[in-house]
Length: 394
Image (tube, rainbow, N blue to C red; front, side, top):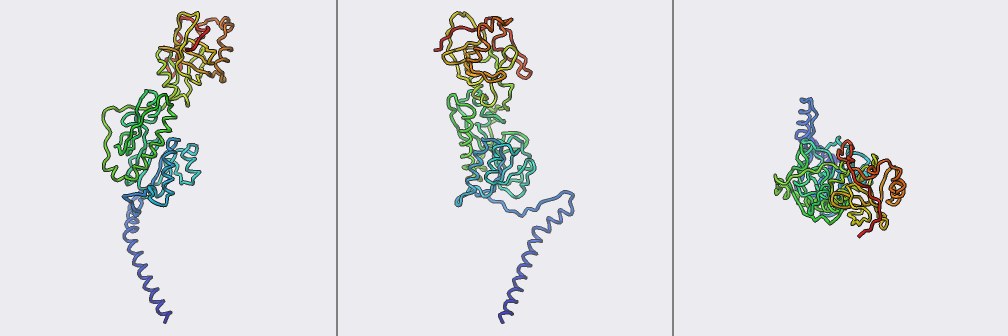
């Protein structure tokens, strides 16, 4: 009797299972197989679900330390047991030498090598932070909620790859972070989902400001993801006025033109790029890197009535080389020719009176401006004296 009942239940169960499999085959797999058979291009079946609320399946695109801050919060959310914003998290990066790859590898996140990324039906939304590559329209459309970008400026000001550097370089007093949706073909032109303003601290460096905006942007990203459908429905197009471009920083920006640049401009330039690209000038035709900038110097000279831009003065009390620019003097405590030298060592080795007496032309002993920054051609039209006298700092 028990055997007979078992057989009846087993037979009924098999019939139900067969009916379910047959229905699924006809609904999902058979149409896909027919399209694949009739087409020369492989197709994928759309049988994975999408969601309209958190937690999200997130694909993250990033490279540098700025991007890591957002990746950290996304990763932490994926590990939470309650009220998660992130369900699954995978990463796309450019190489195994960037900070984002190292973080992903350390925390065992799946990493995709760009541009070989399979996203179809596997993710709800993408996030791009300091990635550096233009994403194609086909890729963007494969993500149901599009791709978000954390951009460290108040768009449309400072579109482009280096907004933080140009914020410092131009002396902006206000900046911020914009969370926007990516649009194909052009960088940083998509609609704004969220934007917050931040004051630029006085005399901060680009690195310091970048750290502040990275943390701010990561927090804003999580807030946007918590309310993503609402933010998308209330998105705003960027203003047509006020757009500026922030190109990549380069060595060509580091060459100083003593006749044209003021103390304030040199100070901003050093704070913007100095930690990555040393400021440069020419000394008797050779490249000199100027390090350890100390800002504007107040100089009182004894024995010299005039000076020209590029003139050098050693301040023994502060171990500083003061250099004449357009409207004053700026100081550096280290220079690098073949090797790094303190201001005192440079003075003793190159600026001492006995060295000048051996020089054929004392006008060669000024820092020479570089006019054509791409070719390195320089301006040496100084006709006045090279400064080497007793100084006092105020």
